Length: 121
Image (cartoon, rainbow, N blue to C red; front, side, top):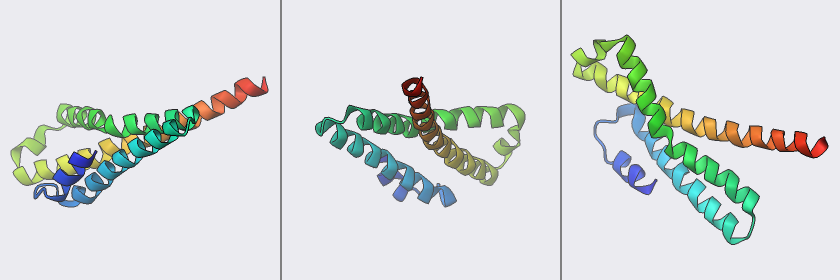
């Protein structure tokens, strides 16, 4: 959320992952605000969609840990060089949070298709 955005903006160690991490934090805040506004208007369906997106982008940190664990399990070479470790960390951060956001969009899209099938049946 907003804290991750602030921390990412002022982090010296993020390299090319700095901008994606700032954007992931802003997207997290945006999805939370959108969900809040929809529930305040009484639109529970849209609120649910935006909460799914919010949860999934936040859960990107779980994907980061999964990707890092797989990388470590198959290639511990990154531990020998501080520079290579930094590069590996950037890749894992970017792909982890992107995977969370993509999974959220996939979840929302598949639920909409599933609902249409039930309504047409």
